[in-house]
Structures are given as structure tokens and as C-alpha cells.
Image 1 (cartoon, rainbow, N blue to C red):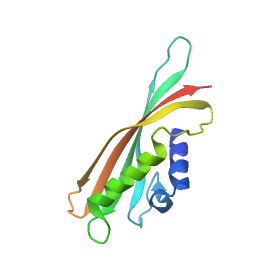
Image 2: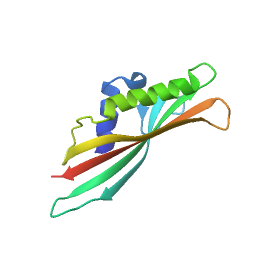
Image 3: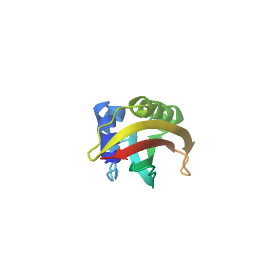
Length: 127
């Protein structure tokens, strides 16, 4: 549910022209965002069902005909602007908060592809 809400928000905000994927297509156009790892940690306290949800988002650019590291970092900034402290609607739960945790960017082994990685932590209460 968190992934659906995040993808919907990023597409609505037109981050990388809406090129946000769970599984990028074979002929993907750069730049784009890929929803990566999702980790859910139960966090029950005094009868309240809650969870911490960690979501890793990957941004991809190229140094040849695209913007390289600056573009990857700009994508991460746009993702942060769209998600950090956002009010995302969840089915079956309530988002207490979503916060940016970290971002980094590096050049892949091919020397051309730039990979940005950012992590978000959300607190969710079940209904």
C-alpha cells in the first residue's frame, strides 16, 4: 500500500515526467525512478498496531546524453520535495509520517550510468 501511495504521489508531481517504475521496462528512457527495496518492521505498543516502513528509491541517469550526477541528485531532490512530510492516503491504515533518511549518488561500473539511492522511513498505523 505504501508503494502504491509513493508511486501515485511521484507520478502526480510529474517527477521525471512520471517515469516511476516497480519494474522498469527493457527499453526504459532515462532518467527514471525505480522503487526498490521495501522493509516493514512491526512496531506495536499498548494495543496500537503500527509499523515502520523503509522504502528505497533508485534514480537513474546517464553521463553521456543526460545530466549525470547533477541530474540524479536533482531527481532525488524532486522526490524529497514530493515525499518528505507528505500526507499520503493509505487503504487499511493511516500514515503518521514519512521522512527522508539519506541520499547518495555514484557512477556504475560502466562509467556512464549514474545511480542515485535514497531511503524514506514511514510510520504507519493499521485500522
